[in-house]
Structures are given as structure tokens and as C-alpha cells.
Length: 88
Image 1: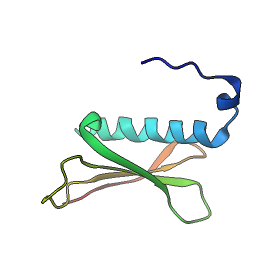
Image 2 (image 1 turned 60 degrees about the vertical axis):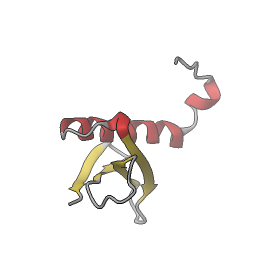
Image 3 (image 1 turned 45 degrees about the horizontal axis):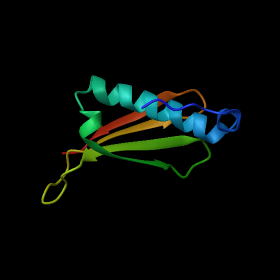
């Protein structure tokens, strides 16, 4: 499904920054063998001075399952991966 981005959306720095963060995290997850499309994805900002976002990939069918999450911390300033964690 294609969407047209109007100029208001393209000026929203937070939205564009998060789009870059998710793109970097998705690439990292795919390289690690995570099926991104079959994951329940959550994104939240880590509470520190830097603009670091944590992207968590978990199973959509999480009932009665433990662990197995794939977590990527991405710095929004330069879109660099700060840390990768894999749950047991």
C-alpha cells in the first residue's frame, strides 16, 4: 500500500527520526534471522540524555512462551546500533 507524504509529515523531525531508527533495527533483526513481519514490535525511548530508542521484536503468539525476544538499541542522532540483545 503506497502512501503519499505531504510536506507537514516530512517536517516532523521525530517521525522521520523514528522511521530511520526502525529501518536500522529491522535490518539488524533480519540479519540475525528474525522474521520481522511475524514479530510483535514495540519501540520506546531509553531514559537518558541521548536520543536512544529500544526496538523490541517478540513473538506475536507470546501466550505460554518465555524469552526469545530480539532487542536493538539505536542512537537516533546518527542511526547507529548501540546494543543488540537476544532473550533466552
